[in-house]
Length: 101
Image (cartoon, rainbow, N blue to C red; front, top):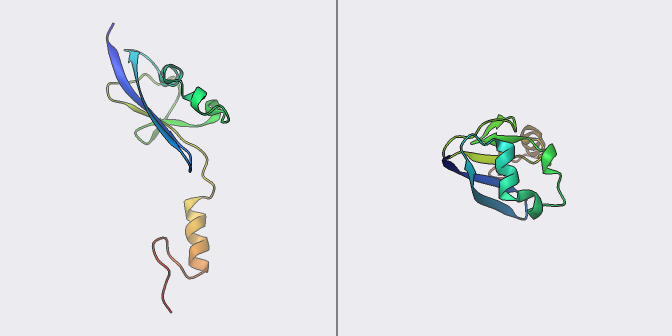
């Protein structure tokens, strides 16, 4: 049986992990998460409750992996980006720069 080399990534504001793991062909996202041991790195977070994706596209944990896939765990945002822009606009700022008077 051949193997696939998969990346698994997860980031918090203060630390990030990018792990490479080899899994058998036919493995799922859940198999890769188990194999890489990411739950041991972040025991304080229930990673099983977070959405997962491959290259920015949400997938089920039962999704079968392909060569070169990058499994991503998505943490909840502290503030919705649209709400952040709205709050900045109300204070006369933009995402990149404060507006000059």
